[in-house]
Length: 631
Image 1 (tube, rainbow, N blue to C red):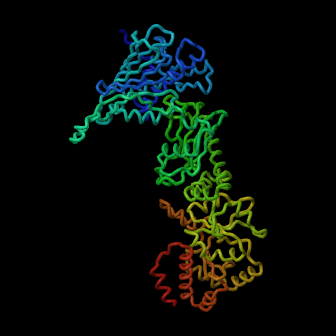
Image 2 (cartoon, rainbow, N blue to C red):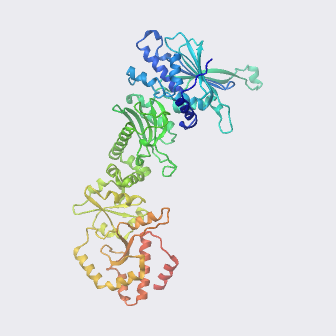
Image 3 (cartoon, rainbow, N blue to C red):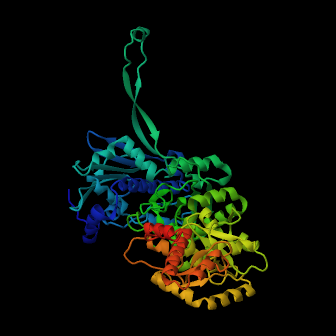
């Protein structure tokens, strides 16, 4: 029998196929099953107009046979089969598939889709097999043919005595090694798992003879004697795939329990989802999707190890377990899947070409998720607040990242703890603002309880204005990126200009500051580079002192940035503010001519202000001794 050679380019592609194109060897079963489904699709399509086919849709099936003794795995179908010429063209020349041509020529609709497009998936069999045999009889042909190959050395084609229409693919598996156990692909449990993972929604049944054991009925004497039962083996034909995807079913025939059960089973979550959405998009590209918002964040969600992404299917065949390109980072908490027949796949089906279809689908999904969150916020506030507790920080990162490119999409989804003791949206805050309020006020700190005690909040609260409490590290960075909301500028309670100072009071403080300029400068000089200046405060009422900052870097930003890995440290331009109406100011006045004592008081007040702000102090022992000395 003449040994035929693969064409040079096909030989190179086959070698690459075996060694590098596919990430996981287990993919071979998905590819062969998909090819079998294609072949059945073609004959089923023909049966719609050709009575001679003699088969109804229920007659079609894919069969899998595993022989551990012979180390062979066989996949058979009763599809359209291949002639000798088609075996030569389709299997002798890699990447010359007939599926795409058949699909185009026959103008197949959604009910009659062909999975394969590139004709290379078949060769993934050589990743696990040392010899591949294909026996096929084409519909309408009198003769069957056998194609055999042991890899890049070539192949043979000969006649075969197969009588039924369809194709058999027989894989003689490679020998096991220390690194690879090819025999695992003969285990029933492993085969079932691979079909469940990749091919569960192939629309024709995938069947297999499965061996089981059952106890033999005992006689009464044996039972009374306590004799252990004997077992017998029997064969049961099992259908290994569910065939109809949940997302392809009509929404009207599905219940909430169906969606929740699918989620907990498919995505291995003990908790029911907080929210789900079933999307059917009939535009271009067309796709179906199931999107879920988990009720609890995965344990590794905020770690580098977490991998976002949706499962990606093409006509019910799993292509990628986590397609990160379908979700923006700020919606990375969403779980689910997308199924589309309009995607352009590369030759291994594992990776996607980053083309227009994928981008359009991703954009549509992003819009869907945003709309679902807005509806939840409006109609199910308790549920949304539960979501915010788990994933809110991710949306804040979304506002900040990319130089605020997505802030307009996300700003109305943000929640902040406020001085009113509740979570509020920016819209709710602005709507409730008194007419004379100029700014959206916020304060930063490690907790709402700590912020509540900050001296800088006194003046704002006395005016009856609400304050947003920013307690997450990313909060102030996000607010700085927003800059304003509905033409209302954000203003830190530590800012120089709060827009509410009494003009008469301001003039009075300014006059006192000029009068005591030498004393304040002496205090600033004694503190050195710890502060940029010491001033009299226009904001303090009952507290003696506070620290504020000048410039773009605030005290909270300094804390956050300096907590990150790296040698470079940043420092805010700190300003020490003294309350001119407090007894401490009178004390300072009484010692202004004692430069040494004035310096000690300045140091004590500065450290006290740091403690109020929740910032670390350089030398606690020195501070303690200083307090004792001055007392």
